[in-house]
Image (cartoon, rainbow over all chains, first blue to last red; front, side, top):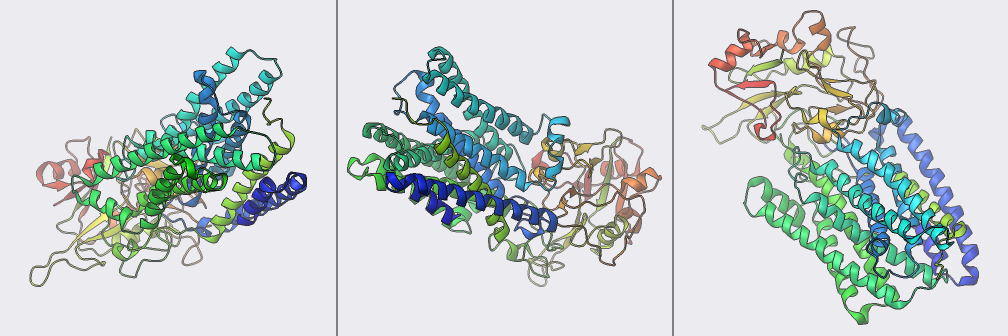
Length: 409
Length: 206
């Protein structure tokens, strides 16, 4: 994955004359990683998901974390590019189409990550035949499907508009619809967790707005980083003040996201109930502390860079964007692992290698099981996620190469 | 009809016979237990809490609670887990399950739902239990069926019949004259995680 990322960023930051060649190499590399990922997925399906780090007591892992993360990236990217058009305010220069394409690639990654998490992907068709409309997962399938089609339509509409074949009003209507669906898509994703009373850590009404704010953080950060990289590679020109505007917006979103985090921690911890204190301790000093502090410190650092004019250099803005993206990913890790890290029935019982991966003892004690993180991803999960990620990068690069994403201005 | 269990916690001796009977009767693959005995006591299994001479220990047999308001049924995207209206049993259709594990995340009763993480492997190399038990499938979720195949034959679940201390009762809570209805009318009882609002069909006499 990192090789591929380096290749991809080399393609973007390299000298313009070499950019074409580097782009082709990056496309080839991501294609190879995608194929390798698909092969690993087949290994997972044939040999069984016992090869992953997931078990009965932590039944979701890296795939669902990454799924939620990519939905956020996608929704955030689309919101940031459709908001100016929807409200008829001045935008960020000619970045809109790149932002929408980035969103589309992230949506495809998100869908891919759900598919690789399924035990029986061959039964996917049932979703459309036996749809149970009370399931938040079903809502997500419907909304993400709509969202993907709508984003493609939105991109097409922008290209048509620039060719003078579509009226501004029509484009604006599509922008508004895209904006609403983008907000909805991440709210629904939050409800997959937040509507479940089964996990105290998840069950909060704040989760949906919080997911939207997190989406705005990582979506804006991704668009900012991609635009700076593409500009440096000479792909298109974007005025500095547009980048500054976006950086300030990123800083504001990061602050809102941290504010929500603070509200949630206070509400959880203030009653000093056993469960609430346990959750606050798990985050600040327990097994999830590394992810908690990377997020908090990374997001604060990101805000400082975004709000300080002297620090807004290309390099530092990319660092700030990466910190924000990593921070939001850390939040997804906290949510999924943290949910399963707090069992409702924690009395000692029969534990097998299907119930939990290692860490338990012959005495069936939960104390030793939950002393460490109940979940750790297995190598195959990293491999499959790398494959899905490479598919997104492949699509992104093919788009950069073949689609008219450059600014018309 | 609302079928369910009453388990007399006061008399349970924690012998795990019901758990083993369930495992054999339903031909459960290696690593899978639908019914477990939880030790209410110390940190380890079968240990008491407190210091001598003030020790206490209890056992709670936990399997699917066949809730009246099941969290799992609502969230299943394809309706593979569903409430059988005629009996009140929460059922699982292996042929339909897409393996998303949403029900496992939604169920508040830790560990009662299990996923076949691999092609089922059987301890003795051949099938055990009743021939009419539905075949276990790789990458699908399963759990206590109330011994559906035995109910169809007019029998009680295997865990009820095998209990040497006779602390397990099975019957219809909608029938005021049933043994289980009488027990919860006359005796003090508790339920697991009542705050979840799931209205479980398993009552523990205390």
